[in-house]
Length: 365
Image (cartoon, rainbow, N blue to C red):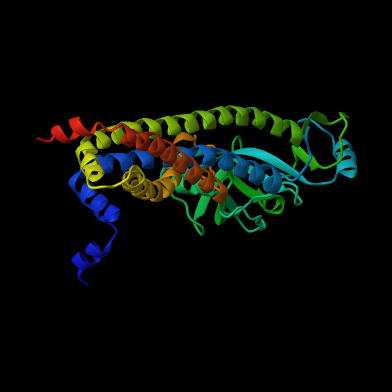
């Protein structure tokens, strides 16, 4: 393929811009980097909201599907427990502290003994509810990665305060966005010779503070606490959008002014040759549009990776949830980047009418 023939067949504005970009690679790259930064920040800002919304749905619609959590007194009687389960169902759990051996060290973690009856669930990597079996233990993916444990490995452990050690097979990994711990079924816990004494009951009925109950928590009140965090996230989101727009405007305008100053002689020459202001504006805007498109194409995926890096490294070891950017957020980021580029192009293109023909042509002598 003869590229020179293809090149010569292109419109004058296309040929002129290709040559100008080739001559001024540094300025073109700097403008592209500005667009990349603007697009990345816009993707991050909208992605912050998408990620928190995804976390909320995962935590409070898939894992915790109950309306109320009844925390029990440590010294409740069997009669009180039977009465409570008769009123509010037998979806229960028990949290215990364990010590386990890992590569010659003793580590301390919490373990959830679960009998949640679909009101308290564990989920896999893809946020799907997992069935919990009674022939071993589970642990969260983040803990497995931290301690180098895989499915099929055996873990030697004991309850804190109990001298009896047990060796259990890891039969699955679950993923939890908020709590990193071991999990086993009530049936397996009892197989090991322990007496299961639940410390929490999960229900959708409005409970009352009666004998055996120490505290009642509603999922609604827990979500309200998270909502306050969302308000802070909104402020951060707005701040990132403002910073993205300012970054794009400042870089594009300054580089545009520099580019325009360098091209005044060429533009004045084109005017002498009979080109109208509208045609010269088309040449000027076309180059900026090309740079904007390249920067935006690179900035969209980089924005996601930047957001993912922030969530991976900024969250403490308790949390584990992925960055999420919905397709509509990419659309908003594209619209924002295009608007910034469009406004800057319009502002700079107006300068073409103000070119001083005499001084511009003499400046090159």
